Every structure is written in C-alpha cells, then in structure tokens.
Amino acid sequence: MVRTQISVDADLYTRAKMVARREGISLAELCRRSLETAVAAQPTGKPWMKYAGIVEGRPDDSGTVDDVVYGRDRP
Image (cartoon, rainbow, N blue to C red; front, side):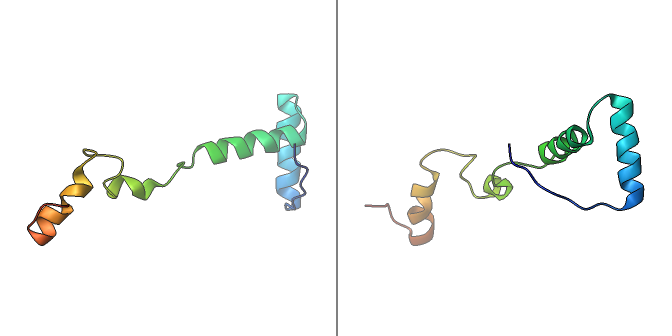
C-alpha cells in the first residue's frame, strides 16, 4: 500500500468524517473506497482503438490496403 497526503477544505473534511463514522470505517477507508469508485468508472485501455480497425474486422483487413490504394496485390 502507498501512503499519500491530500488537502481538503474544512467543510468537506467534516462531512467526510461524519460519513465515515456513520459507515463505521476510518476516513482513510472512505477515501480508498471513493477513489476506487471514481477510477473504476473511467474507461480502461485506449478507447480510440475501436476506430483504428484493430479491434474489429478481419485479421487480413490491413493487407488489403495495397489493393485499394495502389490497385495491386501486396507482395
């Protein structure tokens, strides 16, 4: 586990402490859970790849580029 330090305004700190107390967990655990939720909501990998023809299509699709661009078969 990595130790880190963050700064928050007084009102957020007070409200977070109350939530943690109500949940029966430490403020650190509340922060870990909140970070996990925020990070899990983000897409993983490279979302632009679905537009690159790498994720979808046939394995030989890129090989047909020569046919289309140059009007000939690839060597």
